[in-house]
Amino acid sequence: GQNIDQPTEMTATEGAIVQINCTYQTSGFNGLFWYQQHAGEAPTFLSYNVLDGLEEKGRFSSFLSRSKGYSYLLLKELQMKDSASYLCAVRDHGDSSASKIIFGSGTRLSIRP
Amino acid sequence: GAGVSQSPSNKVTEKGKDVELRCDPISGHTALYWYRQSLGQGLEFLIYFQGNSAPDKSGLPSDRFSAERTGGSVSTLTIQRTQQEDSAVYLCASSPGQGVDEQYFGPGTRLTVT
Image 1 (cartoon, rainbow over the protein chains, first blue to last red):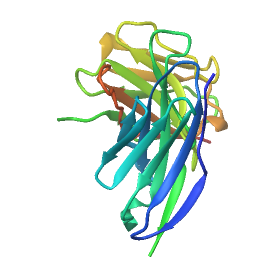
Image 2 (cartoon, one colour; image 1 turned 90 degrees about the vertical axis):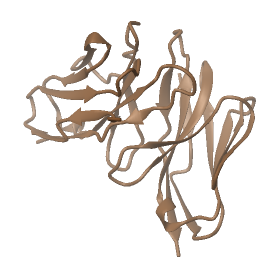
Image 3 (cartoon, chains in turn green, brown; image 1 turned 90 degrees about the horizontal axis):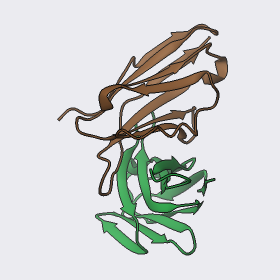
């Protein structure tokens, strides 16, 4: 089976840096995604990691350690519009050759002025 | 180009009735997913279609739930004999089926069972 854990809520200050952690257990890991979801809207893709290391994309970076089953999303120079839920998702082969994508419960990030 | 579309956007139904939710994926995307999201919660995987392969139905919560994907494109999620606990936003996503294969989500259908 699959298990994905991330903190339920976090708060950070505008202009600061925040790190959102995600740990996972899967039977056939094949990539990890981070999505952003504003309240009342659909999730949108932020980043993808399949190899160990850091992927940087503007103010957002994502890190993966496959041996530890661990990822984090790093948000720099926080802006008020970054207030949203951040969803960690894992692509898992499971028992079949096809891969499905399983989501964690999401981390609700609040940015204060 | 056009994104993923879902219909209806909102559906209110009485307990015990059947409902059909529709998803039009992005043209050319071979993978299609259905998820359910209750208020303030994460996405619960329901079912996954990839090309002509047999769908992965491992997330369907009961035999009242079923889904079809006709011609490798449009998908319909059917819930029979709806219950109040079925109330949620039902999200559909499609992906290219290759490469990074990130998902593109539709706006969702908000289902309320009274």
